[in-house]
Length: 117
Image 1 (cartoon, rainbow, N blue to C red):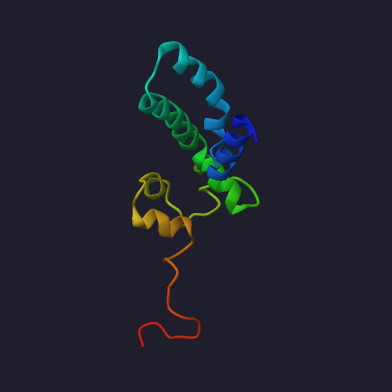
Image 2 (image 1 turned 30 degrees about the vertical axis):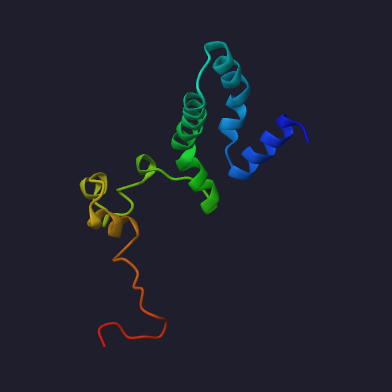
């Protein structure tokens, strides 16, 4: 197994495609500028982290397999009058989460149990 194919395998195992794509150019630059191992590792890992941060939301949405992507900008506040725009726009507000979910948070009580009993 060649070094290139071994590295490709390792990047796939780590699920680090951005680092795999950046490797050839970063390796060449590291050689030219005589980077130490730590500097090279930092540059390679920073590339992967930046890619994940910029595409992280997309990956999670794709993994959730939602039927369609919806944004707050597309939400029709006139149709669903119980949802108040100022409440929703105030991120981090528990009331906003309840409103978006259509009611109070779901109970973690076992099926068939009576809440409050």
